[in-house]
Image 1 (tube, rainbow, N blue to C red):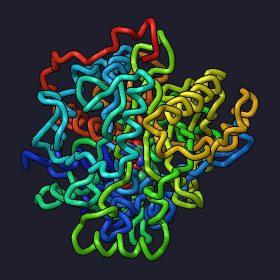
Image 2: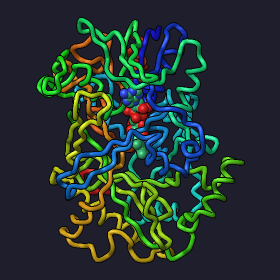
Image 3: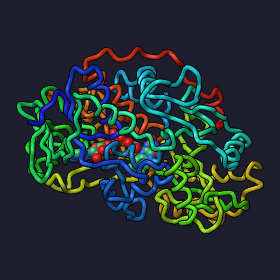
Length: 550
Ligand SMILES: Cc1cc2nc3c(=O)[nH]c(=O)nc-3n(C[C@H](O)[C@H](O)[C@H](O)COP(=O)(O)OP(=O)(O)OC[C@H]3O[C@@H](n4cnc5c(N)ncnc54)[C@H](O)[C@@H]3O)c2cc1C
């Protein structure tokens, strides 16, 4: 009989953290249901191989958007990890908590108890940070966080160029001051990817009270408005995993709303159209879908010092061998070692643009490397007002959901992206880049007018792979909320959702850290513990924010 106190669907960023925390005191049994398999092997463990697993059906659910109307009908890949550790096992390993104001906004929107003062102690609890600002970082948590070596001089040039352009510097964007140019952080440890599986799931599975069930969760079984278990398909059979206390859905921003809808929780009309009996009419399920988009601004390098010289098979083999034997060298980093968080204009009080910088001109998916030596910035606005949805394509649990992001559907998206391109040109134009700067590869210096920039944006903007928000957390009396601030599904007993789907709004940065934090904090709510005491540390806000963008 498969039965436990707590049954968690999904061993991703949030699910793994909950498996660890819910089992920590040994008083409760936990079953984690995970469809994906092992994370063993260099494709996942070697940081520089990051572009490989996200293209593999073994590790990725293989979702894609519907044709996006504002992007010329392009269909964008929507990778989600299908492996222990979930998306943290196929992601880019960049580590960003998000800005303090993001969480204050969550609280203002109805997620009471999730303001910055409330979540900061959880970020500290989860981290084992190597470096960073004194008093602001965790030093003994399960999640190892480090900075890259920044040996390539282009990292320094990028940060110096930001300073020359008049922007702030920050030595720790995960500390008090996010705004500025500085080193980027990585979830890498001992030269290996440090996923939620490494940090949380594997240590939890060493405990007698935690077990992993490999299977496909079809729906939550609800009797008399109470979740009592999960129906799964495993070994080609339909089975039931019983929950004595609670079921917790942590299946990602795409699969969590899908599982809720298949269980009868969602917009009533849409459920009925699919022949699903309505358990709770929650119109917010699958709504509020948000993401970050980004562009790659690529510049030729006059000096042959970039990673473009090691993208050939021979160099890759050498890098792989060094990594396999010593866990060092270029295989041991994700190459995102410098970053910036800046404000787009005067009047914006905290950063709304993020930069990742790498000393190579390549696509994220590793497919189209530029022929010459080059470097590039990934840049994009952080708070798009566009919203999309996840809906059911059919009542068959195996069918892919319908994902519509409505990318670039708000007019501000276009203004913001044009600004991102022009700002990047300004930064690459600083004297710090004089020894390196060749011609602009992409968009190309001929692309200048608003109309030409718009064509480039329409054809080239990519997802940064941060979908979230589809089971929004908020006040219980808000019809669009799906979970309350204790992550309880509104209208059903014994059921919670805790993962990136509950974010009321996307945070200012990459989403692994806030997803893990969500799992950490949700665990305390599930166990009925008093949340960690709120912090009284104040984040840095640029005193010139009303008058200047820098
Ligand atoms: C390619 C890529 C690059 C990214 N880069 C970064 C980055 O550099 N830094 C960063 O911070 N963030 C990054 N992100 C985003 C970040 O990793 C995710 O936002 C975060 O991991 C989401 O966590 P989650 O807990 O919501 O879901 P996930 O981690 O996706 O976990 C969901 C889990 O549920 C399982 N599951 C789903 N449905 C079922 C089912 N029906 N039955 C059984 N199991 C199921 C999945 O297999 C998965 O293991 C990236 C994401 C991707 C895909």
